[in-house]
Length: 186
Image 1 (cartoon, helix red, strand yellow):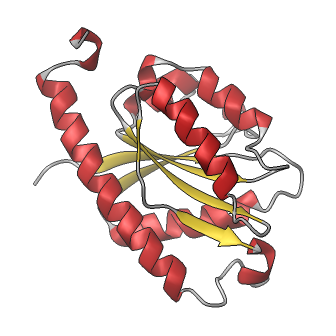
Image 2 (cartoon, rainbow, N blue to C red):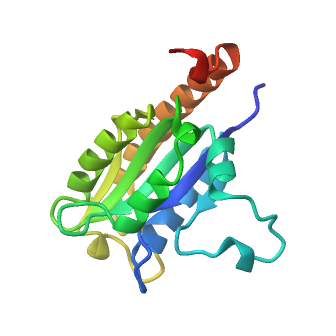
């Protein structure tokens, strides 16, 4: 049996009172139930040195150790948040030849416009984006006060597909990077 896929779940918002925490918590819970992943939460609003008991690794080290990524992002004004762009741009080779999946939320579009923009950014970073995603249009009405989905069936099917595809790509690309390092490919 191979080692579990190390997935970094990246929160896309730093706004006070953000809804991102609710969507990210649901995402992490779904990943944990799947059982094929080791989860690393990366929150740009968090100060790593303030977390007791955690060795302070640089963001680049944390991204570099991941086999795959899930970006949980809102859509603000038809785009993704600036702190997410800053986090993405703070690394380079750490993204290379790794899969990226998206869980988005927002108003009518459910964050899909932000995801389409992020696909272009990650293509420039030599990452592979997963076609299958999860989106929550009108997210504030889809979750109850405890953070549970009111009607979890559709999102449950979508996250199952996303995780299956992400796992496949993560293992395939991890094996490919081990066989032939991506930095030596061109």
